[in-house]
Length: 306
Figure: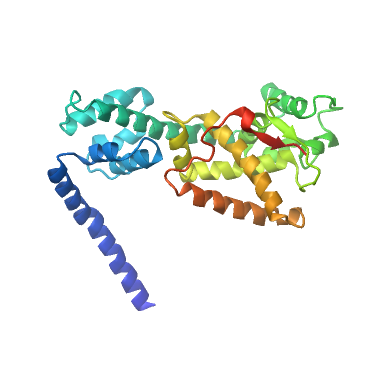
């Protein structure tokens, strides 16, 4: 144990030494050799998307300069001015480097947009479903009408909710984990322009509760930062709630295919299949060029309603 702890401490020390001394020395040499600062090298050597934006994000986060660090948390309206300030700080002539300004603005908009999206999604998740709130009730009724347009709901508290995948007679209990975020996503996945198919082979789960579960998966990908790869590649500027909901719908479609491929014996294997599916998505998102649904459109979706 003593040798293990000693090796761990030494490893951490050398990593610290590399980050603080050697890496900065290499950056200094690269600037002298190329005549370009790190941000210029990133923008000129990487194509637009996650590969470029994540490197810019890392460069700003670990900069010693307060202006550079604060650029990650500015308001979207301040992006243009912040880029001008950064270029002035780095003594970069915007007239001779016009593309740099455009690239930095696009990447900064993606960075602050992702941060704002996390805040918006978290706010929805923390808002509980309230049966006394007319707007909440209206959304829930709309969900029923979208999924069962030809079947009237006999009453607000009814076993009929189980037909679209809720676990009991009052759907509000199923929204406890994901709050209104779960309801918003279910509504997005039940739109009439998204073709819903019934499969001859029953796959053993229902739309609503699985939709809430996949909402939790999409949420965890978002807040962990794993979705940056995908969203930076599909959103040319600021990722927004629509991008997140599109990602949710894509995950629903892919999970349904994955479930059939796994061919579990019963619903008791749901958590195992979900965990395996989660790991597969995480592996895909480690590729900086990955876009889960690069040409995403409502007509491309085939969601399941069993």
